[in-house]
Image (cartoon, rainbow, N blue to C red; front, top):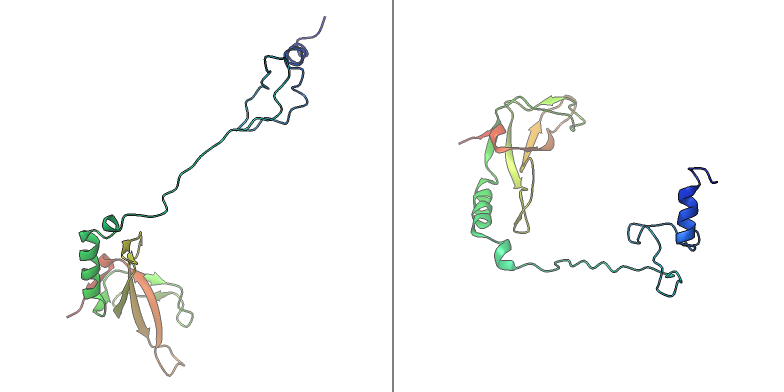
Length: 156
């Protein structure tokens, strides 16, 4: 009499004699081999998966009036002088490591939340240019920082 561990294997091989010769199951193939009415196992199993991708978009929906209004407001803000009103440290200026921007004045150079007429998810949408005087440098060092609108105030 066979042991309990060998009974399922023996029963599986008895039911499906070609189970050992078929390739390992994949997510696209059935877990058990299919036996045809003639008693022969099916050689290949293929499933067709179709995906459709939108290649073009409707131009009228991509440029809604709210995006156009936001773009007009952003263009009006470019070039304005601003002052940073929150304590904010930046570490990307090599000549002045660990630079605190609080109280520094700069100029808005770009609004990056709109790109090619579409709204993108920019966390810090305003690109602001700053100049800082560094010892040993004849000219002030120019650098850029990206800020949110609530981190600076507009100067007259």
